Length: 133
Length: 152
Image (cartoon, rainbow over all chains, first blue to last red; front, side, top):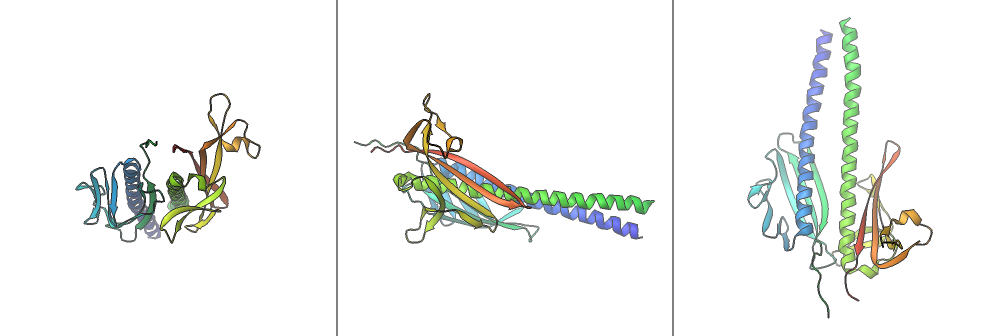
């Protein structure tokens, strides 16, 4: 009897840990994907604008809607991950080039205890040279 | 016999689980360090775009000027970031070799003088993030070679 209980506990622990790890990885993967997407877009964008919860780069609009981030009306994040908030601020010391601080709060739809907040900065690159004199 | 077998299974499974969870935690620290590193590089680039002459050689940390609401670099080291990380941005003048003008990593010749030609139009920005992990100091760093293309 004791053996069955112990074996059952071991199996339950293994299953629970495996599930939690898988969901945690889904969150981490979403964070990585969003970071790469925003970094590449804003860094090399020629025309970049923003509002408190959206960014537009060369005609491509990124916005938070229905707890997902959309890229030109196509969802960028999976249905399993809830994007609770997207906050964008510009703290550039070199206008007109933007330097955006992007904060994203996200959680897992089926595992409420899993949530994370990520904050990263991306600066628009000066890709054109002006002529003087 | 079955108790012995079960005990062996339990004794091997739980330590393995603990190892895997710790491993996952370590890789999360490395990911966080990477984000902090990238943040410092981005802020440094933006600040130097318009403040090239304002920052000479030295160690800096990124900060937000509460009055202007803009990024700045201030002297010193960032400590206790997310209760675990330290970060420095080291700005150095660029020393180029005499043969092809290739930049020489400052760590190769410092604290000795530049063995080549000092390039006033370039700056070497090295960001380092460090943290303690089970008593061992871990570090990650990145270099940015910035060039001032504005006319004088």
